[in-house]
Picture 1: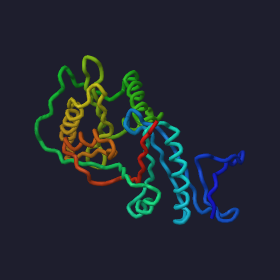
Picture 2: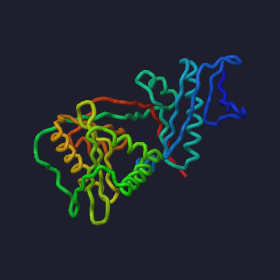
Picture 3: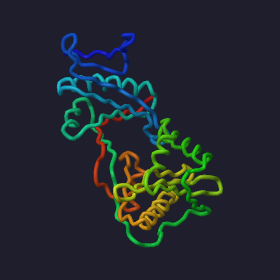
Picture 4: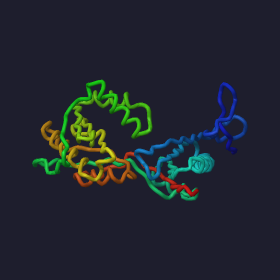
Length: 268
């Protein structure tokens, strides 16, 4: 078995971030792709992410993950930023990655809470007001899309917003301060429970109770709609989001995605 770069079909040129495990001249045992992206707004302490995706026989996977990890480490060093190299996998496969240096765990966690009938107990931050809308105004929608794309470092904010607006019971709640947007939350109903689809606190207003107040308003909104539970999906490494969800009564119920990871800290 040998590991070679995949090639462009049209030109035959090697694809730097793709590998193929070959047996002989024409038997493919597996494939691997290495993809990097940066999320400085969402992950300021470790903004550079390198994902490795591979498929194939167990023997091919071991070799492909080795090649992919070597390239990922090179890309991490080239970025000049603190990086996370990650491979989506489950427990047994994670153990097999230990020999390549994968130790850290990352996960997309589904959190759920039961709603209690009570007044809004969180305190509205000073000088802030609450506005409810559906993001139907083109001007407001444009600025939401710009924030969304900047936060997640992606360009599909318009499509994501359209998909959210199509959900049953879609609602947006905005907290506004004299200086501008303090925070916002987008919610809807799905499978008989409430869904927190997007929760954002503007940087100058973090650690001032914005998220907690918005989540409490969402609880009341869901109760008024007859929904007794709600859920939100949070990346384990987004500690502020995890803390806000826990403080609002959300508890982990399921890992939707699990990763083995290597953290690389930049040293000049």
